[in-house]
Image (tube, rainbow, N blue to C red; front, side, top):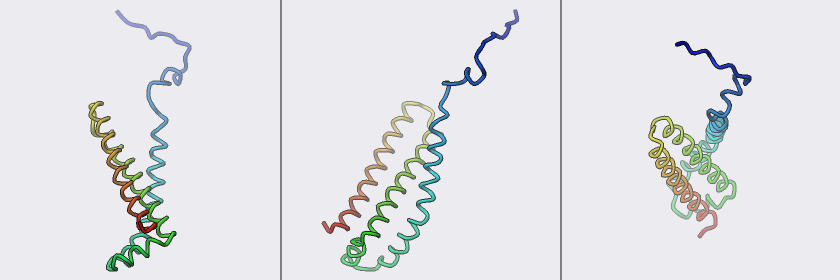
Amino acid sequence: MSSKPVKTLRSPLGRVRGLGSAKSGVSHWWLQRVTAVALVPLVLILAVVLLRIGTADHAAVVAAFRNPLLAVLAVLAIIAVFWHLRLGLQVVIEDYIHVERSKIAVLLAVTFAVFLVGALCLLSVLKLFFGV
């Protein structure tokens, strides 16, 4: 018994459309690259500043972070670092955890942890800036 291929009027693209996601991968890849590029100058500037005030007392550190430019750079760096971290961890989790329930649970836990620690870092910089 031989089976003949079923004739269809649909094009090859029409037959595969809707069978998988080809939408989010590119934007995810671009976001990772954009955050990585943004991190280069931000981290370099902040590293220089932190090395200069690293041995200073608390009052000098507070005074440095009261500078709006430094506070904005620190906030941007924190956002970029934790966004980049979240994107990278998502890729690793999706690649190496194959059980769907476990994957979703780990993604939720990682997302929560990244946002929690990022929010604490932002709060710290804002407290320094506003002198609270």
